[in-house]
Length: 525
Image 1: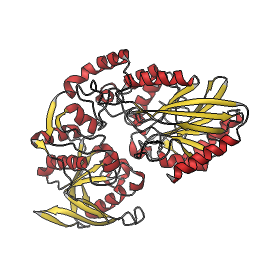
Image 2 (image 1 turned 30 degrees about the vertical axis):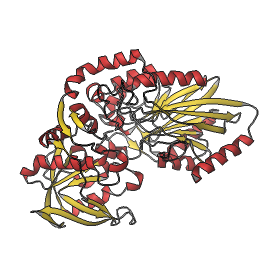
Image 3 (image 1 turned 180 degrees about the vertical axis):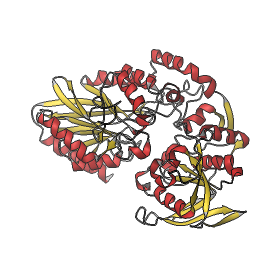
């Protein structure tokens, strides 16, 4: 509330000194859409048959078509931009890669987007195919792509668009740790976001551009650091942390916009559940004198565009046989929300880790290790379809087994809890192991206080010298999410096990009506 008070005071102070020449611009924005072309449930998973007609679901491209058209009509002078991560998250991406995203974004008329880390999930080649298919610039300022043949000379750091005779600079920003999060390949290097943004601001300013919008897939915290550490930025349209900003909801992480150093920072949660609508007024020097707005919820009150519904239905036909198959049942909803699973033990984390361990326990594997960033949705109670399983685990990861010392496991757990404050996906969900950690200790300086491993009918302290057999997914085994200690050819590893989604579906099917639970395997001091 205090932050919002300061924001209001700042806005009023700016308004008091307004120059006579004003330029008004509405910035419509989305982020972290993750291939949710169809409506989603309140659990961010697929919308069940009948629920959408009853007004119980949210989002989907057809609602965005309507909402964006209405917002443009209200604003007259507007742009539409995206904060990254259009890729990955449903069978649409698994089957079509970036083709459907390109088609829908072209239909919606985007003016620009930044590269999210998931745009690199299938390497630079798939990103390049998407870029060739869209009619707007895709941007990334904090990376050197000159050695990557698919992107060199094509992927730009920034661009300039015009509205009502005024130039607007757009700058792209991608997570600096994208190598830990996706598969950009060895030819791309990422750099500090503050320096990269300032370099592009200086270049654009020298060209006479005085209205600058950063499209940032770097997270709410980094966006505030960029705003505080640069000059000349006016607006940051964010993504990556799926942050909900609002002036009306007590569930918001901060005000919309969040003002830092005169910069208006916005983000609109994820999955197409909201359309951001920021109304900005600039003076003749290009300085913001007023910034206001609110994310618009894409609920059942937003009428779906019928042509888009039909097109999505057509694209869905090859997917339906797979995703509509009922594979299991749950006795209650299984909590998989990122806000829970990325900071503590969660029901979905236990389910995934238990399923992994059960699959390979007869091979002598005793510990399962899952990154929370791989868990993308919750499950509703009742029948579970394969489509819902694939929404929870969309990345086509395979089971990987390997050997590591107890000391190595403790180091891995240190990495897992090293970025809890930033709600990062490296937080570990485990089975066959219990641990206690202390957030008051500095990251990687001994946050892990106690580790116990399953032995016989109970648990015993981990032995630093002993070698343990562990199961994880191939992404984590090969160093993803900072788990470099798991990587290498010295681990007697096998990275080509069954698909994790199939493992989860088969495990659930064997449980009857699965009852979700937590049991204290992860504790915080």
